[in-house]
Amino acid sequence: MLAGAILPDMREEHGEPLTELESLAMTAGARVVGKLVQKVKGVGASSLLGKGKVEQLRDLASELDADTVIFDNDLTPAQIRNLERIIDRKVLDRSELILDIFASRARTHQARLQVELAQLEYTMPRLQRMWTHLESIEGGIGVRGPGERQIETDRRLVRKRRTKLKRELHEITARKEREVASRSAEFTVSLVGYTNAGKSTLMNALTGAHALVMDKLFATLDTCTRAWQIDDQRKVLLSDTVGFIRRLPHHLIASFHATLEEAMQAQLLLHVVDAAHPDCEGQARAATEVLKEIGCADTPTIVVFNKIDTLEELSDLTLMRADYPNSVEVSARTGKGLDELTDRVREVLDTHEIEITVTAHCGNGKLLAFLAENAQVIDRKFTDDTVELRARIHPRHFGRIKRLARRATRVGP
Image (cartoon, rainbow, N blue to C red; front, side, top):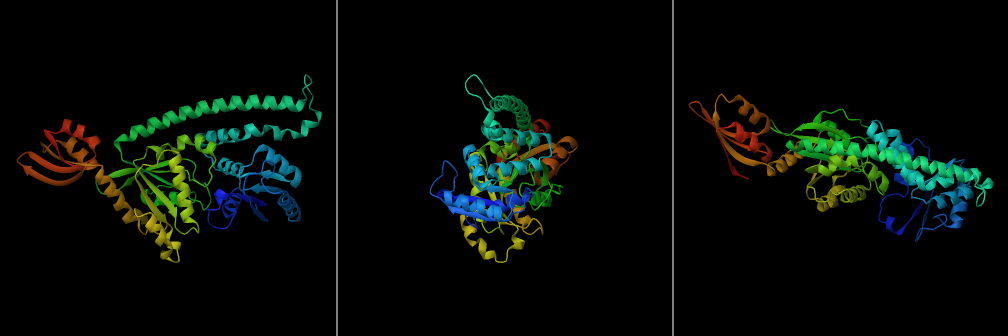
């Protein structure tokens, strides 16, 4: 059973209530048999929903033989305890469901550590609920019962494990930062956006990578980086990142800091939006909020409306085009619009380059090979055994070219 309290700040979310929760539940392997929602003015301390709605939820869950009730809200330990007592069914909240999906998707050592840390952060304040079956034999002052002793033991174990995980992840984050910094000689682009917007499919189409593609939420948890050839002379490094979602749990963002490092350090973001989704505008806003939260609000961004091959009416994008004038429409599946996207990235790349003139001996193979790989040569002039070139390069290469050439001069932006 799916249930949810629609709070005032959630009423701007478009689309059918619980539609996204249903997708999450199905991704986790659940079979949804019923739904129930209630508009509320505020968060109830005891059960979130009103008393009558909780009883209606209990009766409906019993009638449909549901063994679990999943809420589209984050619940406090007390709310979960009260709801389970009344409904007589296992109760999960949105964060616990997302964590379960992340746990099933984690493939690498880093992803598993991140998921485990997020799960421990979530579990720590909820340990009391896990030992309610021992409450009846819990002792008073000086006569502590086994339930209380077990909770304290568990808390110590969780704290110890959490400290160990944070230390390991800190080392991974430091290594990731060094890895990203070592690519300073390359122009870096990162794919970001709502989960299941088609980022991995776009990554494969642009770079020939073989990133995992699934029509499910959070198919990608680990960062994948590949070279993307922009033109004959220039390439950029393109990274695929974990997808975002509305009301993404804060401890998940904190745990996945190392994975998000690629987006945080990128020089250009490609914000991929599922143009065919009924609430593509809401998804775009939600992803933008997460980008602000991780410190990417000021990074240059191109909005990429994906899946336009599945749109019946392109007029549906009219309003979105007005909101995002710096946008490109593509189909990663069919390849439509990818050339235009490449051109737009090339234009951004041009603004990061300088124009230089270089004079060198015709036999300076080291310099000529370096220019062929890293520069856009605009013009060549040969005089006896000397060649003079005009080229566009990234400023980071200028120092090396000056060392290799007889003369190298910067002539324009």
